Amino acid sequence: MKLRFLGGARTVTGSCFYLIKDGVKILIDCGMNQGAGAEAMNRRPFDFNPSEIDYLFLTHSHIDHIGLVPKLAGEGFRGSIITTSAASDISELMLYDSAHIQESDAEWYNRRALRSGMKLIEPLYRSRDVDRVLPLMKRKNYGRIEPLCKGIKFRLIDAGHILGSATLELWCEDGSKEKKIVFSGDIGKKANPIVNDPSLVEEADHLVVESTYGNRNHKSMKDSINELADIIKSTFSRGGNVIIPAFALGRTQDLLLILNRLVKEGRLFRINVYMDSPLAERISRVYTAHQEYFDEEAKQLFTIESSSAIRIHFTTKMEDSMALNKIKKEAIIIASSGMCEGGRIKHHLKHNLWRKECSIVFVGFQAQGTLGRQIVDGAKVVEVLRENIAVSAGIHTLGGFSAHADKDELLEWISKFKNSPEIFIVHGEEKVSLEFQSLISKRLSSDTRIPFRGEEFEI
Image 1 (tube, rainbow, N blue to C red):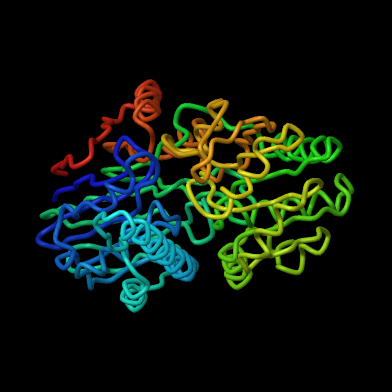
Image 2: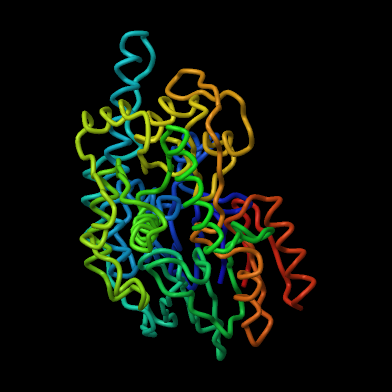
């Protein structure tokens, strides 16, 4: 049995792991790369023949875990895609949105290329490639051990990261013995809004574990909520806007719930929240349709209607989005993308980042090479929509809103194994993964490895 690491190796995005056993070929995630050099990485050929892949497991529906699935289908993949019901529904929305972006970006580039005599490009994939993906989806529930094929069975359990996120357990017959491989997916932190805490695994022979925040801890959710309330009040008193880059999936729904609660508790007065993401609105409706994945508090609090304590405005048309740039004060604008690499957030940064009375609030991880990372790291001037913009607004990073487990929570999750599995550390910047490896070695007797991209192991 061979395990090859084709993405998410010594980097945070592009997760993709390839398992081969007795001729059966399995992918775990097929994510898009993000950040510096991502375009070229996403366009390079797969390291395998897509038509030969038998099964694809999707641990959850963030684009860095599913974003290349339409490309996979466009190049011949016709196997089964196994994920949870909620992840299946959300992935459909995410992939059509991604395909639209690929098509629009290629159209924009080709208009310029025609004028300058440059070579035209094809989109990375099209909506018709997403059409090929949907019939392949097999929707599964948490907690059931099911046969995959001869000699292999699997189970999905709640990873507590976003709605429908899963940790994958695989049992593989190996002669007279059975080996168990666990792929953590992205592990959620405890007390994430809406979703349950991550489920624990007690036994494995091999563990592939994420390390996004493997070298640092978050502020508590309580502290981060208090800080957010203070930022909003102080920004409004200065006559500015609060701009929040947030992914349409997960963080946006959490923020709406938290802002709603702050108003209901009387800590903020009725406020205007502009949700500048048609995708976020559609995903929010998927959330309300899958309340079976909610924790008990969210079941009581979360519906679209429960946001009535705040004045929430969904902007669907581009002209509505552009009109937001005329609002100079007392607006909270939530827009994607969360790393400021595309989408409507760039327009709001262009109109607010240079204004010292405004605040930019980052509530999620910013990968190396992204515009969001440049701003968080203290750049004085950044390029936004081909224009240099001064960074004069207040810049705030609220780590408590992260949907990822932090250092201590990751170590606690791993420490619940009763045996000592071989551990492969993935989905983290190289420096972070190395520090996380050192922490594991001090606490546990497990052998640990940090694979390079393309590295293969016999397990």
